[in-house]
Each structure stands twice: as C-alpha cells, then as structure tokens.
Length: 203
Image 1 (cartoon, rainbow, N blue to C red):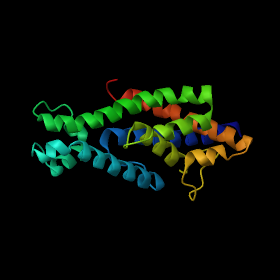
Image 2 (image 1 turned 90 degrees about the horizontal axis):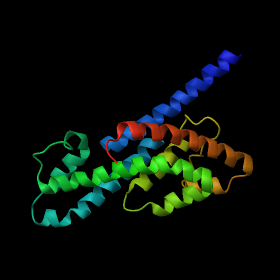
Image 3 (image 1 turned 60 degrees about the vertical axis):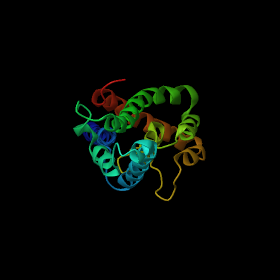
Image 4 (image 1 turned 180 degrees about the vertical axis):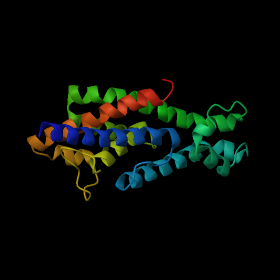
C-alpha cells in the first residue's frame, strides 16, 4: 500500500512539475504549451501583450522604423532574436518589452510564495490581481495560477470551470477548502519558482 501511495504522489507531483515547466517555456517563447483551458487563458494574455507592445511602438510605426509584421515576427519567437546584435534600435525595443516580462515573472514567482506565507493566500491573490495591468508579469502569473487551479493535475482541490475569478473563488471558501487551495498553490509556485530561476536568464 505504501508503494502505491508513493507512486501516486510521484505521478501527481510530476504532473504539477510539468505544468509549471510549460508555464515558464511559455514566458520564454510567448506561445502556449499547456492544453485545454490553460491554452485558452494564456493565448488571450499573449494576444493582449502583443497588442500592448504594438501600442507602445506607435511612434516607431509612424516613423516607419519598423512594421507591424516585423513586430509580430519577433514576438512570435523572441528567443530567435534576443542575442542578435544586428537588430535595429526599434527591433531591440520590441524585445525589451519581452525581456522585462521575463525578468519580472522570474522576480515575482520568487517573491509571491513568501507573500502568501506572510499575508495569506486571499490577500496575496488580491494584491496580484490589483497589480495586473497592461498585460504585465503579474497578470501572467495570475493567469497561470488560474489555469493551474482549473487543470486536471491539481491534487487536493480544483477550481470549477464555470468560475472565472480565482481571488473571488478563494476568499469565498470555508476553512478546510481554503487550506487545501493554499497548499495547492504553494506547491505549484515552488515548481514555478525553480523553473523560472533555472530557465530565465538575467535579473
């Protein structure tokens, strides 16, 4: 029986780790890697992020220093370009938005678990949600947390598909379920932090 329980725990932990790994690959590539509801949520975020970059490149577009097609080309696979020294200043500026997203994602994924331990899950999620704007790293982490809690790889509790807001769902819980959600999210963030630290270069 002990071996069976150990095998089950290992399998569940492997699913959690794979989900977190794919989340960090998504940050690096700006392309969805997880399937199902996670793909839908992240696709929307990346579309919003790319639209925000185009808005911030308005002056360069008007001056014809870069085209929308070129912006899309860079953002569709930024890892192909980020060490290319031949890029124009406008092209480098496009990459800078992606690099900021990665840097912040790495920093926040390291900081958020301690915030949960210090301030509680509900308050921390409310903080992340309040800081989510202009398709930034806070919004991407909030999107990844929501996608994970809606996924099939959670072990203790999962978020119903029909509920859209993670914070509202968590703060409406009774104590036992809240505890399970807290443990689930911390376990996921532990993997997310490890992969972000190992796979996202720079600070």
